[in-house]
Image (cartoon, rainbow, N blue to C red; front, side):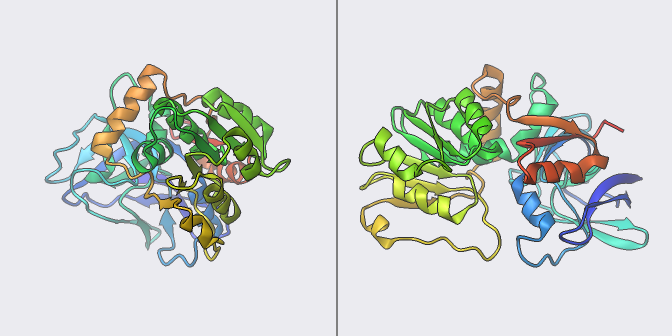
Length: 346
């Protein structure tokens, strides 16, 4: 059996569409017919070669999506043929099988425990979560990365209480869902910081109470006008070291917390004033929102069902798999917030 897939052959060059030969399933592996795949800035960094040397070339890409289980390998009990599933890089329960090797014109093509830029994909059992029947597959695709990474950075990592303030630096796909997470917790105020007015308008729709144009004013000074003495929490979703430093600067002394979720380019460094830590502030990292998929993904599905999480404002137009390079370029240039690749489109 073969599948069409987008393969990264050389960093900095367009992905190549290839017909890959699907290997027999190993114990703990699952074959999924991919329905939708999301794309994020981490993939752009990988595609462009901004994450350092890539020792796995050529390899498949994509780490969030939805699909239908076609076949299961020996020992798989978490899912069965016909199940609608979320595909995610985040590890849940089940077998952790690791990578897969496809064949392409007699050569090996590597893949991790999950990939989604292909019509069919071999996935490790622990990267799959069953989707409730009433959740649209297109919306659930973002439950593979962007929603849990963003909402989890608020609920699991920062853990604010109702009435505490939250600032979010960068309101692209991750930042907008972090705003939504702060709104779910009933944070007040919720401050959105970005340079694009259209993104800030979306942030207001997602729950932001205050908007700051970072190219027109100093975000730290503006946040201190809104909450004198500093805000309780800040999340950086830009991946820019300067914004990371500002996230720490803008939180209050003695307990203020900054969470870094944005991915910087390989080799970039964040400048840190040690005095900020002497003031009793906390700087936290997060592993994709510190989620436990079996616990957290059903919770996020409920937020979708109830309308607490809005997905449509974040989704860009649907792209064909043959348009995957256009989708990544649109994301990189800011023309798309969260591209959605519809694998059913020819």
